[in-house]
Image: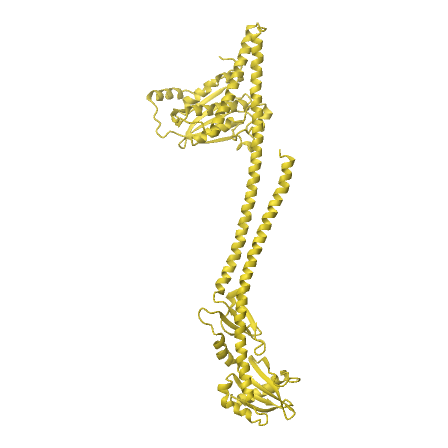
Length: 543
């Protein structure tokens, strides 16, 4: 059982490790996100500086055109407004109409580069729609202001200023052709060239006025409104590689999350493995302690019995010949059990250290099984157990270590005797799918389903042993599995039909098995007879 101190360690250490792993993952993701934001901020700042320069150049061109056009107007001669048309192409190509208004906001003079029909239409629109929006009241002298508005699907940019003449306020206004600005000015200032950042202009409704779409550039698009002239428009810029940067940013975030998740999974798996290894080591330590206690008890009991009966015989206090014979048989039985236990422990230790060398040679497995049964004949008679060997008619030969396989069969038989409750035992040898199967069946209580996969573990003893009083060290079947593995075979344990358990192993059959003629004859002779009951003795005596 887990000690309270170990339980406390699990309760404290495990949550601490999980919290530490989650905290590490969180701050790792946070740091990566901060670095990504710093990169985006650096790109945005450099793009904003570029935008500022473009916006300033466009506004400077518009304001310079206004100043040149207004400079031509002589307030003493209102007709001078018409003189502007002669130099408009050179001085202010973006201005389409020039107006002079008196203090009452009436149009004194209007010059336009459009047709008479367009002039009349513009005059009506200006008076009805545009003039009410101009902030003429309180306008300081020579202060240049702009109105950027939209009517009937058209954009209008009006520049205006106020001047004094003979104590009267006069207003100068210029109507800029926004179409010309889009066609000529914007491409000249922000025209995209190969390898240079891409630009576009959006209006107040986010409709594109100029340039390509920058939707695929994502977070790398930076925009800036025109501060005084085209203030309802926004100039945007994005690096040429913005789509690639955006795609890499998304993949980088996905990779970061994936790497952090993978790291957390690895950490949790490592924690789980450590806990599993610690628990397994604890269970192995407990099994070792139990094994030492069991073996010590198994050694102590027969030694005590041998000493007791030996002293009784040595003191000559038992004069009855039958009693002396019985005590000698008990001493021989306990000596045999003691020798078997010690041999099992030594064999197991040699297998665990890898110092057990195997000598493989072509062997008659049926004859080997008979010798193993004969070796245990005395124990079968003493326990009152009958053993029956079943073999196929065909020769059963395999390339095995005879001594090791003999130990395997003895351990299987010993296991059947201990857990079979004195029931008959069947030993069956058969050939199937290129391998030879050796099965030992008893008719005892069977193996609990939850223990079938563990019976071959070292030091493991089923709970059935506690209920039946079976004695043992828990290494017999572990030796069977280890030897089977060395022979490239496999083992199994299951319940038998009609009750009891079947424990067996399978090893590859010999590829070039060719027994001698005498062996063929012996096998034919022996197998022509029904299976023989090799040992039976209800009275516990040899026949």
